[in-house]
Length: 159
Image 1 (spheres, rainbow, N blue to C red):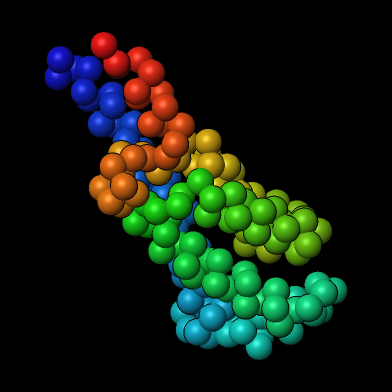
Image 2: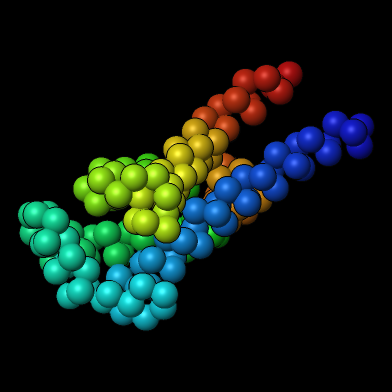
């Protein structure tokens, strides 16, 4: 039975790593956009100016929305709460960033291309599909990963 547990454990650990791979860059980006510190310290005003230069309507509101999504969303992903919803919003955020800014710059991230935002969008979609996994705060607090996991667990194990 130990061999049966090993793939399940590896699968759950892989979901933790997916959440880390998406949550860390979101949190770091959000800190820069909201608080103006870190590797990209734009702050809300600087980020709003950048969005205005791209023609985004209501750039101040959009800057705060994106900044808070990345900051709070990064935290939620790291601890494993509301992972599917947060990941869906992050996927949209990254796809918009890819199309609005990065696409004209080609592929490499070093030249401002789509490499990073595309990878983050794909990670987000993977988490939308998988959910947080059992090694998440959502599982500990609510004793569930998500509603579809509850349904699949109860359908095959009832006697």
